[in-house]
Image (cartoon, rainbow, N blue to C red; front, side, top):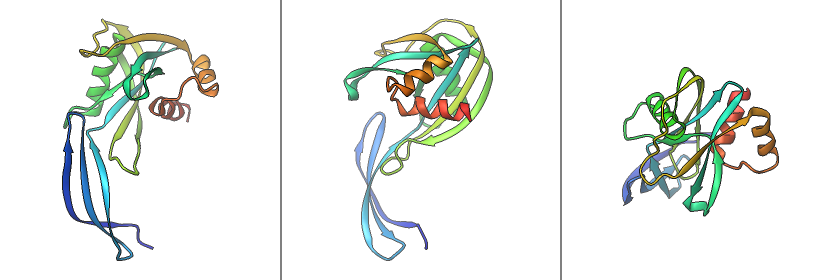
Length: 173
């Protein structure tokens, strides 16, 4: 059985700063025709940073959820930006730390049913403090937790951010 769809026509129906939305007319491998609404996103990075035995996290208000979330440092890729360079930039912006040791943990697709967003996961170690300088309008609080405490918060449902859960899982494997 083939699982391929051929794009017959693609029309951009929204052009935002962070995402673009397209309506694609497609032909499914069984011959049927349909359409897909696709959110195109430049992607992002997530950093699991260890300061000695502690995990660096950030507490940040997330407007779509209307609440403060506890998550790993992360950020969007600029169009065409190298993910590793973005990870280095985001770690320093959000926590004030630079890392001397980096491990690539792969990537995940955030919501492949409707978006092409790809998040690159990294582990950062051997940290040196410089200074925290978040983006304009970004209000966050850098925090440090013992790794076991982070896992306990995941188990208790206190951490529900998918990118954080994915990076923690990949690092554990």
